[in-house]
Length: 156
Image 1 (cartoon, rainbow, N blue to C red):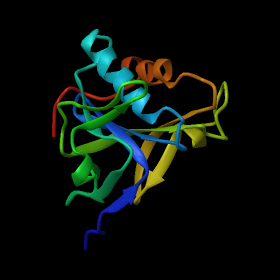
Image 2: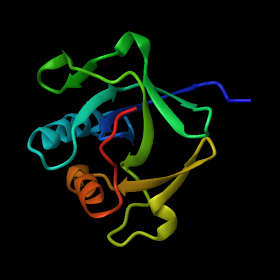
Image 3: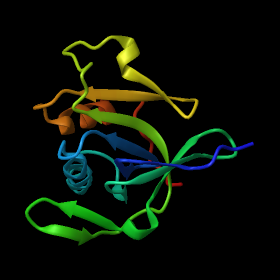
Image 4: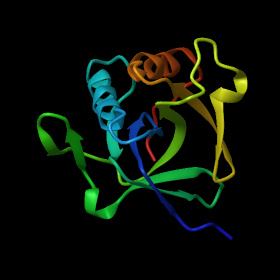
């Protein structure tokens, strides 16, 4: 039996065929990282990127056991851009999570332990990037996407 979907305080952006799930405390830069990744895609630094969810996301499992993220219905296509307010963007309505970024992570380190670079969500093992407060997450995410197996280029 598939577990029901769970609402979490997070944002997500689809990069290629996998979503980057961005978690962190309020004001930590989740929406900013979504927009930065979209801009990085437009600059062709990473594969095409598109908003999935901002501020609140729903997680559930697919029939084949992958973790899926969806936007809250009332927030579909909306992204908060600090200094401009709420803006409407093209968005995906579902994506398979391929990477978790934890902003304000207490276990962030210059050379993190292997355990810190993995996380289990809803019984799905995923790569993780812990980012300490005061550090820009964009270079870390771009480095992951361009130097590791990363996220491929097909869409859900």
